[in-house]
Structures are given as C-alpha cells and as structure tokens.
Image (cartoon, rainbow, N blue to C red; front, side, top):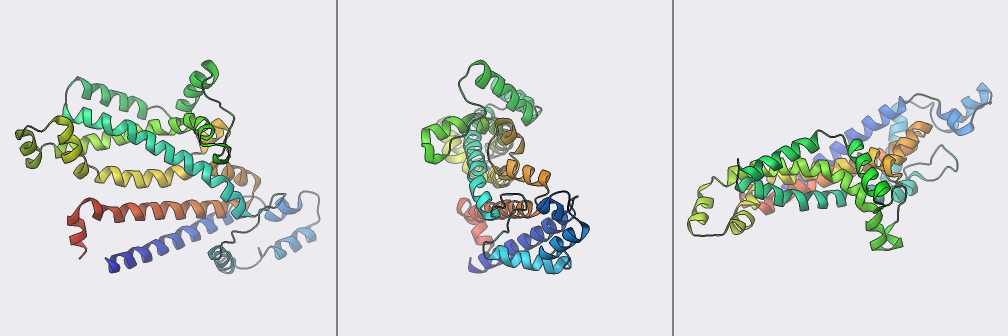
Length: 317
C-alpha cells in the first residue's frame, strides 16, 4: 500500500508538471502585448520595452517558467495585469467556491436522480420503464447545456418566478439563501450528468444482475430492493465512480456557460474575463488550480477502488 501511494504521488506530480508547462507555454502564445495590457494605449515603444523587461518577459521561456513555478509552489500565483492589479490567488480563492459548489451540487442532484432510475430500469430491462428511461436519457443528452439552461430560466425564473437568475448568495449569507440561488444553475448542469450516469450504471447493473450470486439471492426470496441495493449496486459502481471523478474535476472548470447564463462569479467567468483582457497571470493561475483539483480528485477516486473491491487491494500487494 505504501509503495502504491508513493507511485501514485509521483505520477500526480509528473502530471501536474506537464499540465503546468503546457498551460504556461500556451498562454504565453496568447495574442496581444502584456505591456500594453498593463500600461494601456498611447505609450512609446521604449516605455513598452521597459515594461516588458520589468515583467521579465524578455527572459527565455524556461527561465520564466521556472520562476513562475517556484512562486506557485509557495502559493504565489502572481499579480493580475488588469487594474486594480489584485493577487491572482485572492481572485481564485473568491471564485473557486462558487464553481466547486455548483459542481458538487450538480453531482449530488445527478446521483439522486440517476441511481434510482438506473436500478428501476435495469431490473426490468426491456420493459416499459426501461424504454421510457432510455428514451429520456437520450433526449437529455441531445440537448446542449446552454439550451437546457435557457429553457429552465425561461420556465422557472422568468415565467414562474420560483428562482432568481442574475443573483448569487454566498454561504456567508445563509445556507438556505445560498442553496436557493444555486439550485437552478446546479440543476442545469445536473441534467446532462444524470443522463450519462443513468446509462452507465444501468448497463453495469444489467450485467451484474445476471451473475450467479444475484440469481442465488433471488432464489432465496430476497426482495428486488434488497437485491439491487445490497447485492448489485456496489459491484456495479466502478464505472460510475470513475465517471464521477472525471466529471467532478471537469465540471469545476467547465461551468463557463452556466456561470455566464446565470451571471455567477465562478472560475469560468474569471478565466473568460481574464482571457478577453489578456490577463496572462490570471489565466495561468486559474488553470493550474483547476488542473490540481482535477488530478487530486481522480487520484482519490482511483484509490477508493480498493475500498469497494478487496480484489483490487490484493492485486497491488
């Protein structure tokens, strides 16, 4: 187990290094002149050259990357180029909880909907309920997230007035108020995940329900609920858990459309705004944090397999 943890830690560090190098190199190719972003228009060529030199932009790329990475390891992600030139770490710390909360709430909503739907559908595979669930999930997967968000806004925010659209309440404003403002954007994200989770878990459950130990449980007179929850769900969850890890890490950085539709102050809005303004340090710092979360979440999911199936633990011994 100790060797496995060390190996995974080394892999995690290598992945983060590769991601950070790629991010730094790609962002460095962004159009525009950072010196112009900092000083604004109307300055002389000499002034712009002096500003680039002061920002270290005249140094070779490996030198600039090494300096940036060394600062990042100490928690210093740099300073924004755009006035009021705030610290990148502070801006990320303010935006990350919004995106993280949306991602977690969306995952919880998706699981609450997908698990019972998948179990109900798989137990009567080929039946009426299974056909309805399959058609419904295909239909949801065919609807882009921005269109689903617009439909939900039109119905629940504008027509019925049940939820706000252009407002956000942080946890410090109260849990109830926060969840009230977060529910509709989280549901927008959850719909697509619900369809995906349902189809993945349904397929694995159908396979598991054909195993001998399931047939034995049925022969003993166990109820369908007992068979599904106690016997079939756990060994059918590996694909779902893998998908959860991928989805959770991905959603933290891919809620851009939903944050834009609902005017939420999350990571997606931060990155898009920084990219539009040519704010290189902000983009680099935000992307690095998202990559770190993504890698850590998937590493934890990978380690959790051994808790679900002892055979995996024994395979590493």
